Length: 184
Image (cartoon, rainbow, N blue to C red; front, side, top):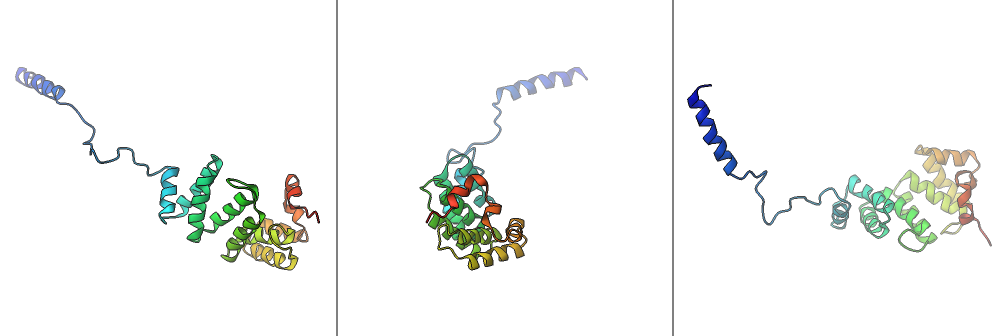
């Protein structure tokens, strides 16, 4: 390197050090860290009617973190747009009292909505509701028909239930049997 090129480097280096370096221009009206991938944003999108599989699945995470009120809002918004998986989640929440008192009738109603929309899990669950008389009047024949539809769609647990003569105890954990026992 020549003496002239060395002397040109020093003034350039001094100029660079004197000028503040910014990673990006900031917009005083903008957001540097947008809320685009959070549960709050998913809930906001759902309430605005902008739902898809990813948005609707966020209700599961809301439920797991204990925010049942937000999960209910999201699931209901997604269910209104036809997402059957959120209908079965609402039934689960109603059955177990997440974010509200246990309500077997509402649980069965959500199961029925999912079943009528063709969801195999909804058909299975509503069939169980009918077999047990849980949240609805007991109707074994109708319950079996929903279980059969679910089995035809490939749901293994529905096939297992059929193989066990539609005895719902075959697919219910022992710890939950008390909930479904008819006491009258």
